[in-house]
Length: 160
Image 1 (cartoon, rainbow, N blue to C red):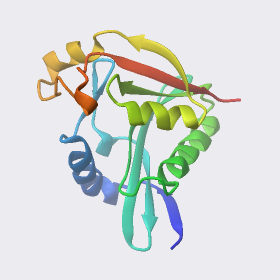
Image 2: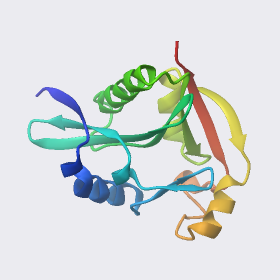
Image 3: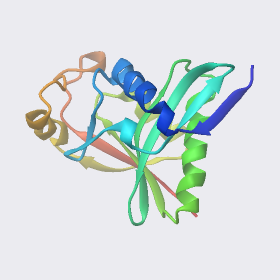
Image 4: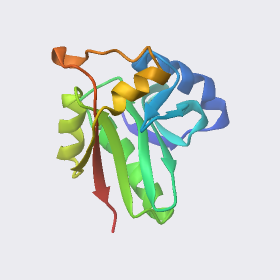
């Protein structure tokens, strides 16, 4: 079946909220101490037939575009890459100089995924998750592979 990538619409808000909750355990995501509600952000949905199989949400600032969430129901089928490609085009169209994402220090799969797509490690925000946990206590203290979650790692892709 063919993969379709399309922008989110107002009609998608409830689905985005449910999808985000199913993948993140909450309808909100924190980066750098700020709470983001993906269902309120622009994004793209990937579909195969009538099935929604992936979602990316992002926010645009003056010179940069930040990926807030990226998930797909089927890994290793090009869904995440296609979603990033859509946001990359949108970022360029909005004159963003860079596309960036923040990943928890325990999220080894995300760090590998983004680097394979040209993103570079640029900063470690020490104790960013520890601080965020004071605002959002449901953030777990231990994550993938038994790694203590405490830092955010910033990856960026410079846009030409």
